[in-house]
Length: 120
Figure 1 (cartoon, rainbow, N blue to C red):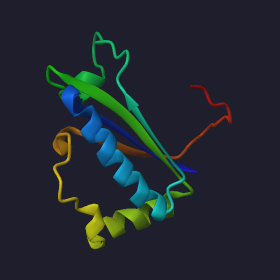
Figure 2: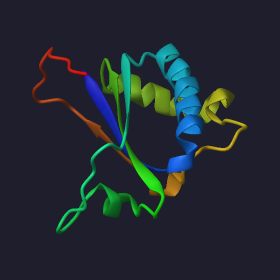
Figure 3: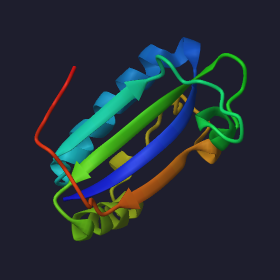
């Protein structure tokens, strides 16, 4: 298993646009082997004393934080989809992306512990 994680500032009024964009992305990522995508919309994101999610992405007033991750079988699957992003035109949407891509944070992670528990 391999995890790709994101922290994204999204204008509050673009929740539905983000949800639609995400659904289209999930269809494509699944085609390339993604096992699971979780998109989480800010519910309780406190301001920190030294750092926090908002400061990390330079969130502006009226923006909400999206915390998202993708579960892949392995790193080579992620490497393959990253290569495909430059070759498959479907990865270049014609519609406006509902957030500022320059402030998105992405990271890839090798899990060191996982449990089968799931909660709502």
